[in-house]
Structures are given as structure tokens and as C-alpha cells.
Image (cartoon, rainbow, N blue to C red; front, side, top):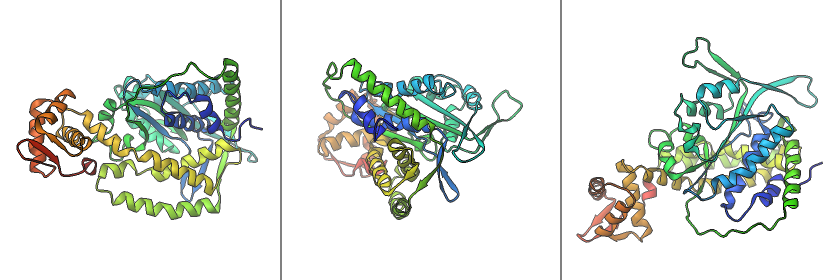
Length: 405
């Protein structure tokens, strides 16, 4: 018997501090449930098997509460390992590709109720409060390429590591990822070379672009209340962690997904931006993953219903609205590329109603670290390509910069 009818709602009540963006706490909670489920539950869709692992990236300016939001969730993951399953694999946030592959070779076996067999899996949880100071820098080997392969939970992962004569094989691998990142980090992660079909397209970006003065309280809950709530959350999380077996989709869930998917796919294909289309390519897969996470948060039934579909669709619709912001901010962070400066100048004009004096526009670009020569070259390019017009004093924006991502 669980303490809470909905683990995610209870977690939000526990973690919410009115300091971090609320959506950060919501997605950390979903990541924790996904991490607890590992590869022990799955939903079969004809020849496709959906495992509820997710790669979540909290994105904001520095000091916006990313690590503060991550801490209470990963504290529960660490406690789950310490108190309930010492074999639960937490991947070090500093490490090499070779070390990651070696760790993921360690397997557990689980039992499905009513089935007289043990099933192997290798599941891991990676978290880092700041991606740029973790293994996600991709400094040692092709760490990110390996994480990219792990996202799809392949039945067999094989790799010939540098310096080894024998091929490494891992069976039934599964990884969940939770990390914080600044917009500056995005320029190396989300760019014209990497966004199409790679690691960047597998991430769920939870974006908080605002910089605001935050209010802080000393804490309304007493220490005893927090300790009690944490313990109950941990006990329920242990029940979620114990779930194993196939997930059943009700006929209503199946009908809703079958109706929605082609409509979504048509809209994605019709987008003018190949980069935006790529970032949306796994929206359907992530919707199913989130539906499983929502179901596991509520009960041990391992059933997804139309209600879970509708909730998961709303969640995914909301989070993918920020994909334009992700691409735009990633481009603008690259101050050495013409496309980055073009995006910066276009957005600077857009924020000011589409018109600025040339001197003011150049000054804003310089203040934000762009180089004088590149600014001049880019403005000439924008005028020549029909982005802007210039009457000798005032620059007028002629296009929506976000339509050219």
C-alpha cells in the first residue's frame, strides 16, 4: 500500500521551494520515477518496445536554481540505492567513455511475477548539476555517442574500445540522464552539425530563459515534517522500483495515440526548420515514456489509459514549445559564427518592436561580446538577404528570426 495516490504530486509538494522554476521540480520528479523503473517495465507496440527512460536537460542562465532543483530528487535516488538496492547503478558524472562502458557491463536480473525466469538488464542513472563540468564535455573518448546509443535501450550494445582487442558487448542496456546546462553550453551541444539525429535530438529541454529577482523563505515546513515526507516518498519510490513486467495500453490509449501521431508527424514534417523538426522527432516516443511514468507514479497496475495519454500529450506540448528558444539561444551563444550573430541581431530587433537605430543595435551587439567586424559583415548579409532594411539611420526587421532556425 502506497502512502500517496500520486508520487509526482507528492514529490512536487516536497521539493517546491518557490526559488527554482516549478517546471524544474516537475521534470526532476519524472526523471526520478524513470530512474527507479530502470529497464524492468516496458510497453510493446508491435515491433517497437518502449522503455520509460528519459534524458532531461534543465537549461537556464547561471544561478537560476538548476542544481537546487536536482538535489532533492537525486538525494532520493541515492537513498534508494543505499537503503533498498546497493546494486542500483549511479554513473559517475566525471568519467571516460571506457569507464562508462565497463560499468554498464555489470548486470542485474529481475523476475516478472508469474514467470519462472530471470531477465538480465543493465540500467544506470547519470546526473550532473552542470553539464559543462561533467563527462558531457565529451573530452575522453566518444562519451556522448555512447550515451546516444544507450538512449534507445538496445537489446545488444557492441563496441570496440580503443586499445582493446576484444569487442565489448552489453545486453539490455538502459540509461536515464538528468543534467543542468547554461545557454553557453548549448552552443557546443545544439548546433548545425550535431542537432540532426544525434544526442541533441534525444534530450528533453526544460528551459527557463528569464532572469528574475527571486523571493526566498526560510522554510514553512518543520524539519520533522520534511523528514517524514521524504521517508514516505522513499518508501513509495521503492515500490515503484520493484515494479517489473509488461505495461498494458488500454484500447482508449491506443486509439488516442494512433489518431494523434500522424497529425503531429505532418506538422513536424511541414516545419520550415530542419533543426526544429529534428528536435521534435522523438516527441511521440517521449510521450509514451511519460505516460508510463505517470502510470507508475499513481499505482502498481502497469497500465496506461487515455487519461495518461492526454496528460502526457499536454506535458510534451508544453515542454517542446521551448525548442525554438533552445535553438535560438544556442545559436546566439556562438559569437564566432555568422548564423549566431544573425540570430542575435534579429532577436535584438524583435524584442524592441522590430526597429532600432543602427548605432543602438551595434552597441547592444558589442556589449554582448560580438566582434565589430563580424557585426558589420552580418548586418550587410542580413540587408542583402532581405532580413532587414536600413534607411541610413534606422534598421527595420523584415522577417521573424525564429522562422529561420
